[in-house]
Structures are given as structure tokens and as C-alpha cells.
Image (cartoon, rainbow, N blue to C red; front, top):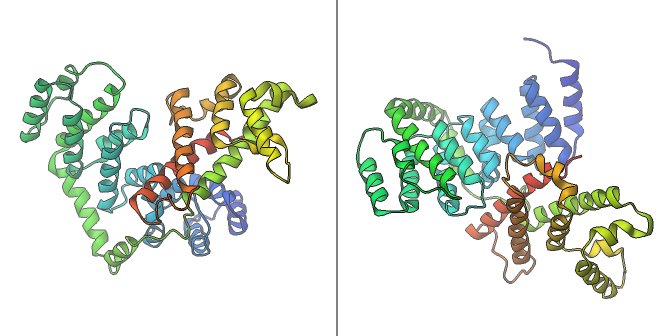
Amino acid sequence: MTSPSSETNADLVRLEHAIDLQVSKILSSLLERGEALDRVLEIIERKIDNGYYIGDDELADLIGLTRSESIYTKTRQQLFRNYSGLLRLFKSGYPDPEIEKTLCTKLYKIATDDADPWRRYIAEALGEDGTELALPTLEAILFEHAPSVQVKQMIAQAVESATVFSAEALLTKLEAGSRKNFIESVAKAISAIKGRGTAFEENVSESRRQTLSEPGERKKLEAAQSPTNSQLGTPLSRIHDIEVKLHQHIKLRLQTRWGTKDDNWWVKGVPLTIRKECAQRREDDPERNQPYTYTYLIDLKSILEKNWTLFELDFMRVRGTVASKKDFLDCLGRLNEVRNRHSHPVRAPKPNTEAFHADFAIAQQVGVIMDQFCSP
């Protein structure tokens, strides 16, 4: 067995002592090298047991690479609430059929949201690695989005047929529009899954059966179904992290552009209406902190929109996830809606309800985008 490199040994020591966001960053570096994974698993599992939060993408990559049943069981609830981590886990081929089922459920829920880029990513992933389990959901989405009776009849005939249907023939019937790319990915996914036939399905099913037949594995997976939020936090705690990071990043960009002399960055970078509202909030606060500290999340959205040219390079880092400036700002709008719901305990969704999990998923998704947007 090849000994780990000196760089890997150094990262293992750093990982052992890392806290907060450092853990995920160091883990990502270790996974890229793929060395000493047994030691990595040992450290990460101990940190999970001690309540550390590990990033969804890094967790999914670790589980996909090592097939660690123990870590998967402990973090399954976390991964199932985030699109990015769940997709990575699905693409790794981890043998739990609930992964594909959950992706299908999520896809159906967001199928009509033209501002959500994840629907196309999920459809494309199902096209690449999906099984016949995904066909009912994909066909239902395609049928519901069909613009005419003629196209609906074509889809119905294709669904009833055991043969592969032509995605190209269907797409020629669809009008160009904001949903065409998504519909195209759904149609191609159906075609790809049917084209693979039953051999692919049988191979995947056999892999899953072997895993579930191992001693104790089925019990572990069943036990993992019980929700636990102790390591996940709440939508509001995640939004708090996002808001602090975005708040600091915007201030840095404005000060770099306008300078700090005579509060130029504040006067030239922040709309007058927001400055007035912050001044009033400051008057109402006995501590009377700096005016910028009184901005709300929705204010940050307006500041970004006013100064967009200052943030275009930051936006390039998230173009793979968010298609346009409008989609990016819409993400902040949705996040603000979640923030408002959870800022009022009487109206906030109860923990372990579908509404709570949906809001947590939004916070996680936007958090991933903002982490990339605000990175140095």
C-alpha cells in the first residue's frame, strides 16, 4: 500500500483540528487526492458524532467514493434535503433506491418553476443514470407541459408503447419558450431510460439488493428514515449565515469601488430609500450601531441590483448554477420569504414537517450559491 503524501498527512492533521467551514474545505482537498480514505472516514465520522456540520457536496463525494454505510446512515436526512448533495450521491451510484425516488419527487414539485435551474439538472441526471423507476414522474411532467391535444396524444401513445419513442419528433411540436430546454431534457431522459431497456435496470437492482442483503444494512436504512435536525440547524440559522456573509461581501465591494472617505461607499452605493430606513431603525435602537448594520436581507438584494456591474465577476462563479441576473436576485427573494416565515414563531412551519423541510432546502440551495458568489 502506497504511503500518503506529505500534503495528505498535513491535511489529516488539519482536518482533525478543523472547525466550522474549514472541515468541508479540507475534506474536499483530501477527496481530490483520494489518499488515506480510511483515516478520513474515521475523523469525519467522529466530527459528525460531535455535532459538526459537513457540507453536503463533500459528504456526498465521500460516501460515493468510499460507500461508507455508517456515514450515509448518519447523514442521510441531511443529504435528502439538498439538491446538490443528493444529485452527487445519485450520480455516484450509491445503492439506495430512495435516492432516485426522492429526486423524482423533488423534480415534480419544481417542474413548473421556470426560475429554478435544479429541475433541468435533475432531469439530465435521470437521463444519464436513471432507471425505469423514474419513468412515471418524467412522463407525467411531459404530459402536463404539453401545449396541445396533438402532442398529448403523441405522449400517451409513447407511454403505452414498450418501444423507444423519439424525443426529437416530440420536440419539433413544442414551441420555443422558457420551458423548452427543460422539456427537452425530460423528453431525452425518457428516451434514454427506455433505450437502455431492462438490462441496466437489472444491474442496478442487483447492486442494490446485494447492499441491502448485507447484515444490518436494511435496518440501518430504515433507522435513517427517522428525522433528526440536531446537526442540520434550522432555515433561520442557515439564512443568518448567508446574510452575514453577503452583508460583508457587499460592503467590501462598495468600499473598493467608492472608497471609505466621507462614507462615499455608503452614499454612492446604497439607495437613498434604504439609507433613510436604516437611519430610522438606528434611531429606534438604543445601541445606535453603524447605519449599514441595519440593512435587511431584502435591502441587500436592492443594493446588488443597483450596483450589479461591481458584482459581475462574482456572478461568473455561479453561472453554472444560476442562469441569469434575474434568477440570482429571485433566489434572494425566495430566501427572504423563508426568512419572514421563520422570523415569526407563531406562523413558522413546525420542525419535521414538509413545509419546514422545503424551507430548509431553499436555504441550503441558496446558501451554496452565495458561498460561491462571496468567495474571495
